[in-house]
Amino acid sequence: MKVNFYTSLREYNEKKGEFDKAIQSVIEKGNFILGEQVTQLEKDIQEYTGAKHAIGVASGTDALVIASDILGFKDGKEVITSPFTFLASASCIIKHKGKPVFVDIDEDTLQIDVNKIEEKINENTVGILPIHLFNQMSDMDKIMEIAGKHNLRVLEDAAEAFGMRFKGNSGEYRHSGTIGDFGVYSFFPTKTLGGYGDGGMIVTNDDNLAQLVKSYRVHGASKKYHYDFIGYNSRLDTLQAAVLSVKLKYIDEAIKKRENIAKLYIEGLKDCKNIRFPKVKGDQHQVYYVFNILAENRYELAEYLKKNEIGTSIYYPMPLHLQKSFQYLGYKKGDFPVAEKIAQEIIALPIYPEMTTEEVEFVCETIKKFYRK
Ligand SMILES: *Cc1c(COP(=O)(O)O)cnc(C)c1O
Image (tube, rainbow, N blue to C red; front, side, top):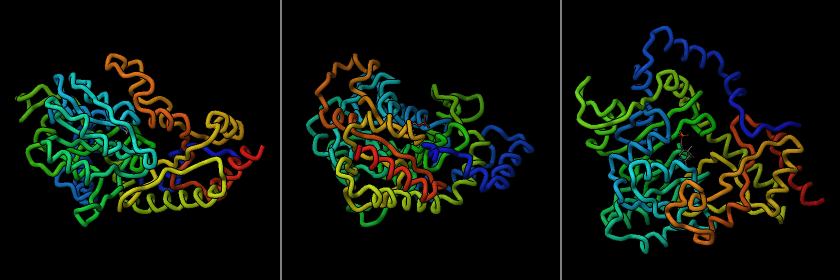
């Protein structure tokens, strides 16, 4: 049995009529840039997440860069973040010459270790950039408490976290991205809410910050051809917004199906002594964007699964502080032992709403067979 790591085709074939109609409606109107489908999606995402403002941009990466620019994560200022994430979570700080300051991760949750943040704060620190990674949110209670105490801005990288909610001290479940000053989502095709190309969104509850994002995405213009800032050319494509509107209609169902697949994996692999699962901390509503295991002989396991036509992925094989592009920051091997260890053990298994029970069971059986060898 061949099991793809991901495919968009099953969902497309299931809802072909709806997707085709949505795409065609844009082409027939010709409203390709900031058409009404973008405005509608922004409204729908405000409603879904409870964010006061949602502003579509060209990608999750752009969303991070624009938000960092507006929050002053630049010009030598320091921003505390995790080295165990996708490049864009830290390159957005560097883009305008800010300095990412890394803090190791919590071994159980793989999120930033909130107990190590405060020791890195100095008079140059302006922000914290938590990443809600894989399937759970970082400890937003602690992060907001530290930020409040030290007057720091918080940018939530919720690129992978659409649909996740965190309860904590507020007593109510709040969506990822809506707790800090800004939150960003990515609509990269594999993401929980993924388009048919690149796309992203910035959410905020602050009217002034929202106004700035709206201006920054159109070159810093306050009105057409009147530029108050040096901004960006970064809009969510109308075609993507149309596709995403179809997907958003079924998002709760899709999240539920992901959860069911995760449960099947946990059930199927729970007796396998050679692997561990990351743990979830805090009262939160998880979303399984990816399903990771921490595995003995990870490289050999990955090879074995590949030979058996099972797609896997490694998020992330090299923590950011060891990347060549970040060498100038002066970090070295051993600086973040937890992130470095997890990078050797972690492997992501296929998960998407249209996966069948038989496929999940086949993956579990193949993993167990590998360790029995
Ligand atoms: C996907 C991702 C991004 C970038 O999003 P793009 O839309 O691909 O630019 C940023 N941060 C994290 C953690 C991601 O997983």
